[in-house]
Length: 163
Image 1 (cartoon, rainbow, N blue to C red):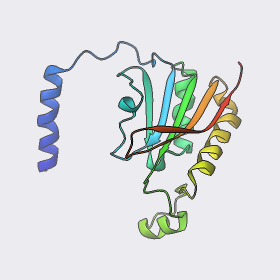
Image 2 (image 1 turned 180 degrees about the horizontal axis):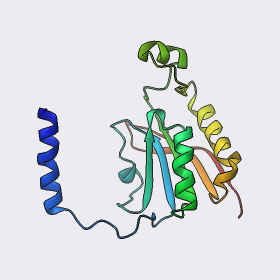
Image 3 (image 1 turned 135 degrees about the vertical axis):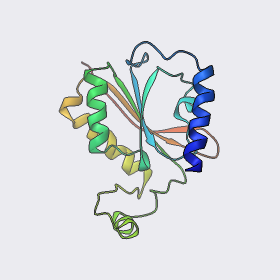
């Protein structure tokens, strides 16, 4: 309970000093970022973005899962997103392991989408985005690898289509 109390105290300070939220739920740069939940990544800061400019979708490994596809469908069709950045990162806990190892460690019979190779994983995720018919409004996608030590990104894969 002590941690929850600290969260509420921090929220009171935040609420008393915060700037007004953007009026629209539409990301002003028509951008969505899919990235890992790793605490070492601040996706808005990495790309010099402000609140209201991009949707940020996070999960273990920054992989394109069914739930990411669901979120991107809403982002594209309801909220105007046209560009998707998928960003994995160095020293990720999902890299260098296997789904079998993660199932054993967690006791969960899930498809974890462990990352054996960042290039292959990002290329696979870019292909999934391109081939998912209901994501047709998305015209550009790029797969990046973020270096958690240097703070820099490297392009691994990209596709673009005309609509």
